[in-house]
Length: 350
Ligand SMILES: Cc1cc2nc3c(=O)[nH]c(=O)nc-3n(C[C@H](O)[C@H](O)[C@H](O)COP(=O)(O)OP(=O)(O)OC[C@H]3O[C@@H](n4cnc5c(N)ncnc54)[C@H](O)[C@@H]3O)c2cc1C
Image (tube, rainbow, N blue to C red):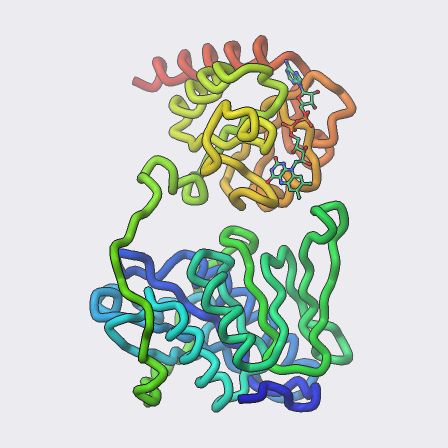
């Protein structure tokens, strides 16, 4: 199965949809469908041909009851291709073979997936079978005016530079994007949506894998991306129990607790709290950074936050450059005062 088509930018834009363990679609579907819509429209403008956004869902019977790929129509998708099988989606090799098979038949020009455990295992498998490239963990995607090529931007060389990668000669162009990198577009009504259930050869479902069990993060560890407010602490806390102060502020604001990588490396807090290039990407309404300098690697995980509040005693701290509210001072002085003020406000409201 060869994915080359001589470098022509033809075909639709596909999004590999993901069902969560309970069966509902993961939020990345709306984020990626919105981005895919933008790209399909840009491609249409370059080539003069309308391009569709198609969601591919590989589901088992538990997921199919709850997964609603048609909801992606509100983010700009035109249709879904659904394949059902008992081992899907947990058998990633089978998912990779089926995705490659469908792509070989329908020749999409772009396939996007979330850089989740699922996307990170299915996409490389499919890319290898299709003989094409894959850019993992993109932080930016756009269409190059003139050529219609996908511009895939991601940090490179240890996160010190950002590189823009093109796939000029192979198809499809494949990329994964970390959840939260793009905002889901405001939901819109009225897009026509078609669902197809293509036949897939039985041998593609054949599996050498044996399902043993599924172990997830605990509920408290997994919700950082879903929070409206995140309060993060960095090396400036200077000691592990600084996170008590961070947690106190977070619990008053019903916020998640984040951290910079040094705070995690010093074992002040667990890895599931790390925000940044090698941690989680969050996009809350408010992100509060305390004792964090604002390295590019940290900012890669929070720069799409709607409002950034930072507390740092260095007036030249880089984080102030991207902050909506910059508080220059010692966090051990500022945070207790903030906590006191918030408590008073909450008392008034009670
Ligand atoms: C490949 C790679 C991946 C990486 N991935 C990540 C990642 O995912 N996430 C991440 O965060 N980093 C990541 N890093 C590390 C990154 O380069 C920085 O080293 C890190 O973000 C710095 O963390 P920090 O801001 O907590 O510490 P520092 O840079 O040391 O900053 C501490 C800040 O606290 C301030 N401060 C000190 N005391 C106080 C006080 N009492 N009150 C107020 N402010 C105070 C200081 O002025 C300073 O600005 C990565 C690096 C590499 C090479």
